[in-house]
Amino acid sequence: MGARTHGTAVADVIVPATRQHYERLTSLVADVRVSAPDSVHQMRVSARRLRSLLGSFRLAFPPKATATARDELRWLGSVLGGARDAEVLAERFSELIDTQPADLVLGSVSQRLVGTQEDLCRASHARAVEVLGGARYAALCALLDEVTSGTHPVPADMTLRGGLDKAYRQLRRAARKVLAHSREEAPDIGPALHRVRKRAKKLRYAAEAVAEAEPSAADLATAAKSLQTVLGDHQDGVLARSWIMDTAARARDDGEDTFTYGLLYAIEEQRAGRAAEELPRHVEAIRRAHRELDFRN
Image (cartoon, rainbow, N blue to C red):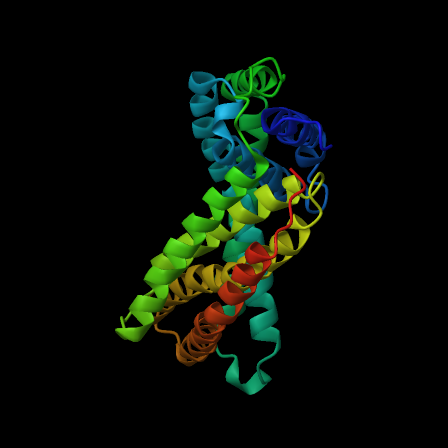
């Protein structure tokens, strides 16, 4: 490895990784069509990983085609996200309701929360299957085939470390804003935490790809994944609280007792507070892992 130039390292590591994610994405279409367990989630993750690497190491790919591909991957992710978000919320609400004492679960709360999400999941899945058989998805696949082909020259001075450092700096900036909000006792740091989560995912995906050639990046990927997981639960809670509030309003209009909705909302709010409290510890773990990177070229 010592004789390899930096640009070649990127060509040998990152470009093949994007190709693998593209092939993984297309291979999951059949599973999504038959609603195989976790298939929508896995396809969405493949789209996110691919889009993230194309952004972190964008100079390794044809610029115009890559910009379009990233926009279209965002669109595909939003299509798949409808089914996935509803699936996650249905499971979250079901677990939340099941853990409450039976005498505190009043009215049609289960049907209104869990049943509604299950209905949305089925509708969103049908929409995703329709999209995967359409012209726009086919055009995206053709574009990704071109972008990940490895035919675009990679700049000789481009480095694996450079892509990681860029993603790390973006995460640190986003995290500092959240911590500043916390010190100012801002009422809602949800959007800022969501940005940190997105930056953590970007860093994780870059570090996981780089770790194939530079093992010291594996610890950075693990630390970023831990933060992503904590903030992912927080974001699910943001969506859950919004649904609880809206559903409670409809139940109230129908004359139902809304006590249980208030109880569930309070539980979700407590979870959110814990996620924000854990942020400094996870950011510090990421900082240490980044500082301990030991690249061989």
